[in-house]
Amino acid sequence: MSTTQDATAIPPGTWSLDPVHSDIGFAVSYSSFGTFRGTFGEFDAKLADGNLEGSAKVASVAIEDPNFAGHLQSPDFFDAERNPELRFTSTSIERAGDAVRITGELTLRGETKEVTISGTATGPGQDLYGNERIAFDVETVVDRRDFGISWNMDLPTGDPALGNDVTITANLALVQA
Image 1 (tube, helix red, strand yellow):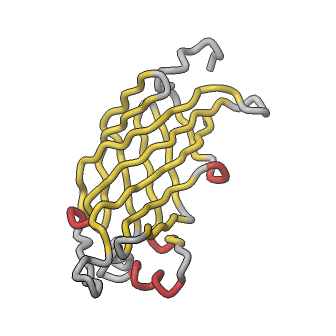
Image 2 (tube, helix red, strand yellow):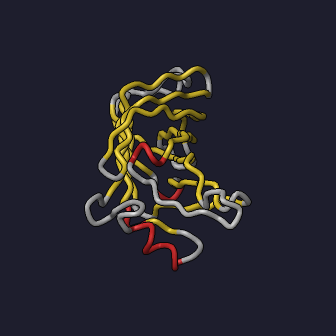
């Protein structure tokens, strides 16, 4: 790729994930006073000819309290036995400068819904070793109930323990293959 390529375009070719410089996570309001966060340790993503695809292994979810990890794998939440991964496949990518808006299909817990993720795109450009890279730092907010995740319980105040809006984040560093 030429370094004179338009840095605001989505580059052609195939770009593979650099897992060391990437992460995928989620956050949801918890007990009306804080945020419950998790990340996925096993995931992959690829940008190929303007299409972004990615997946994460549900069993690799990492959270601060291991006592809750099993509950997240259960049918109350991810239902990992029947739905071992979540997937995203883009249908369009729009970029204006550093701003990026990616529309696609998110499959979570066996349900597929159209979502739009937005944030920033950096590159393409060369790293210290001469590799061509591009990065996406994006997020979306989904209602977990749309994906069949409706478990909740009431706090002593009567408020629900968990919020319904879940923020999903992806910080993806991709290297031209």
